[in-house]
Image 1 (spheres, rainbow, N blue to C red):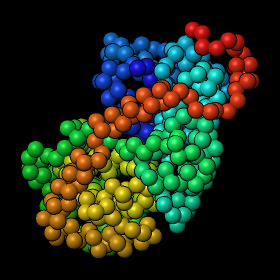
Image 2: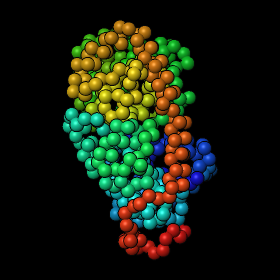
Image 3: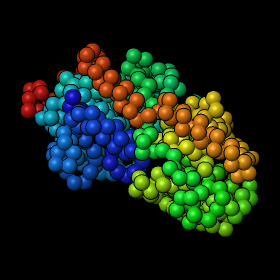
Image 4: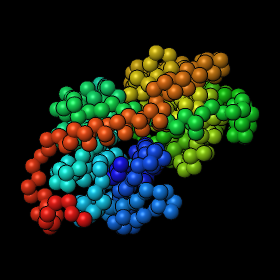
Length: 406
């Protein structure tokens, strides 16, 4: 099968990881992938088959790009249309990048007579209980009318599905396929944690870690306040991995004097895995989430996990796979109690780490994720395109004539 994948390669975020892992797995299973992404270096179809058989890369020009959203150039729609018409994919899969092109894709693919699948990533909360969840709810309201015209929309949890149904997206168009982790790559340390080189370099007995954006919606300051208030002592370390707009001010307030070590953005995946394998507890204090890949990676490495009940993260940790903070409004208070508990009772972290690993193996493997995605592709191909908006003026707007000619 030939898949045209529209996603992100930079800057680093969960969408980038998702696109890399899924497309690499599809290639491993013998599918052909054309990877469309926003870049200043324009090419219409660069063949990378000498490095990865059946892989092509197509770039789309942009005016602005961030971890959150992308503003394409005016000619981007026309270039995308022409590239898809030439490549003739069996399925277009858009890992939505929060750009105006997301809203144009249904009519574009309808004109090309190719099924269109989306993965909808925006974080959410099952209640509008803070400014972040309110903002994200507006994002869902904005996108729902367009998503109603995609042939299938992949979301990560039934909470997301219920929300989109309430906003008018047909239930038959929504598929719940959670994120998946490569459980061979993300696995517990083969040696005792205390014996790892990183753990020895940190020189402590207990290691807590956060990996993710250092941004307001991640609620990182609540974790740091709790750590400071708990007086964790010189035998505990809080390792902060990631970058973002709050990195500089928070780093200036919370540092080595209270056992906080800032590693910044770590690009190398092997290094991030090494950090997880050397730690005991992973903490995710977010106000809003989708389904955190970082959380799943930590669980797969056998860490005890503490997370807020935001997005699907509470669903992931339910029934004993970790500690769920049921409210996002008193995270610092809750963590101030929980952190010393895990510091003083290492057997608790070990037990919950085993439960976390078992949960990933049960529900969240990358292999299972890809099998479900393949089945979805086959389903949309079998059923053909569902009813979509009229596109009578589309070819004229692109200055093109005829249908899917090469």
